[in-house]
Length: 473
Ligand SMILES: [Zn+2]
Image 1 (cartoon, helix red, strand yellow):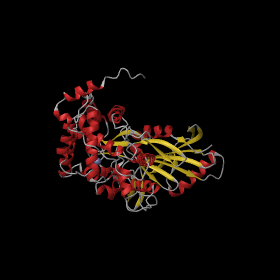
Image 2 (cartoon, rainbow, N blue to C red; image 1 turned 45 degrees about the horizontal axis):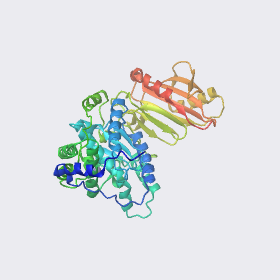
Image 3 (cartoon, rainbow, N blue to C red; image 1 turned 135 degrees about the vertical axis):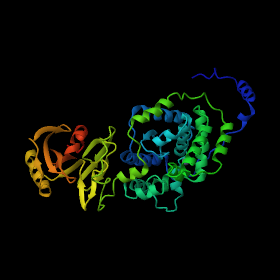
């Protein structure tokens, strides 16, 4: 491109000189902290942790809300300082149906914003402010900068990823939540020092201004969060524990705002309608509720999702994808939890699985599993498996004829069953069987008490249709 059309230098100088004095205050320069990791390693860590979070958290799939959040995120990324905005970063902006006022970003770009943040925000700029603050943590690579400061020299990337993954899927979740952190992620990657907080505030303010938002909105949001965190049973402490107030937050953010030129005001007209869009979603979970329905550690003596016999909430219309190793993927209601054992995965609603009168009870949900088959004949293998489960369920009986169908385009058999429900009365079971390429029997079993059968029918059908067998054929 020719450069002849660029304005001559003196003109630009003239314009600067005619601006109000306050603009001449320089914006604060932010120094990138020392980091032993590469941006690629940030991305890998964040990607793995984000996958865990998408499995565990109630992700909001509503396209209006998700699309809106992505639009806001894109606005900010577009004006992020080029030297900090690494090409390898993989940004994503995901709304989650959680009640607490919180948001967090993982190394390399994945950002999650709680529904509670929208509820608490009085204007779009307040949500954008928190997002800009989180984006600043990503750009400044504060997570891995933190890890770089860790004393153990053997703390390598793989181990950190293990810590992240383990902390999130493991049983320490309850304890971590009690301390107000993000499933233990907080301790290493998401618990920022006051120095990093101030950096994120200032860089966040600068990015906001370039995107057309007044950074003072960020200060207002922090004030709301602080107020919430001090109130009895407030919903802000989680944020506060990972983003400590460096002190005088409002003062220095507002001071920075004075030094910044705010670009053409961003269009915030969608904010009001997006706020009402949340009303169409299921009620948000609290972190404590999420912890309760989370997967217990593998091999734990007792797994449970709530208390059997208590009311079971209806299946969510929102779905999330679960996978069972390299064998299958399926879409399940987002308000159901995964329980994994060595040869099966159960996906159950709240109060669908747990201890009742000293017995392990599975009253509602779906179980995916594998069984060794002594034959290559599907009917024979299915019947052998039925015989095996009948031994521990003496009242199990056929509730109709077995029917052919397809699971992930493979020949399968559906077997309707009736059993006595551990909750009293009858329960309806559906057994669906097919072969994996190596001759292993793949099955899924739907379980629901007779009186809830109609309410779960569509959900079970939808899960069944979503199953993709991914074993190598
Ligand atoms: Zn922060």
